[in-house]
Length: 315
Image (cartoon, rainbow, N blue to C red; front, side, top):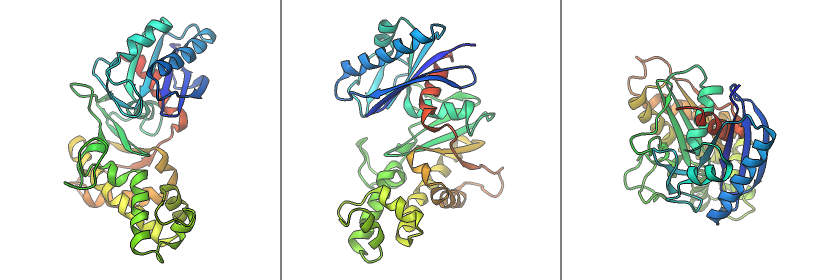
């Protein structure tokens, strides 16, 4: 049994675990992430890996999943997004501290790989995994392999353009999918209704503390669970663009399955039902091709570290 240590590095938390060949997590360690200090981040990762390796000395590899664009060397953070380590050769630095080979992967790639190997896309050779939370990320599996691209920047699903010249995005461009289909977009949809149709959006406003200027995606989801028509309309708007984005990706990739993950996936059928409808309406040659199911992820909160650990075992 080849054991591997996976580390999932977030803006607020770091989770690490020992993972076996079957994707089972044998032990975990969780701690706060000192996101503002790159040296402190590295020291924290090194500490948790050493702790796990002491208990499982047979663990032979380490995989780190982190937000940002990771170079094709699976070592260098070419562009960090929410952590201060752009340009750092993370793999080399951590490897020196723990005495094990270390690879670095984009966090969405790590999560998606776990779904492909052990979750909702297991057994499929071609899959699209889309994580919808504060932003939109994803992983692309082609012929059983994770697609990284020539420079390691492949799979940035959230930054395909769905509305040319649309809402500004943190990446510097406009009209990206994540500006219309992420949890933040859900809040924007609710805010627009609160401004222009406050009576219609009354329940959303109430669940946002009564302040129409501060509408949250969580409040919209809570209202949608109650069947509130304004909140359900917010989801309809979000999934209309999500369907367009998924259909565009399928025109290029032709996957066997689409897996929806991330915080917004917790809304279940409130998200999934209209997303499936919008996807089917926009899919090229939809009536002539095999059905592409759109399903929810199965991996849970540990999928990121599981995927990172397993990718460290891959050549």
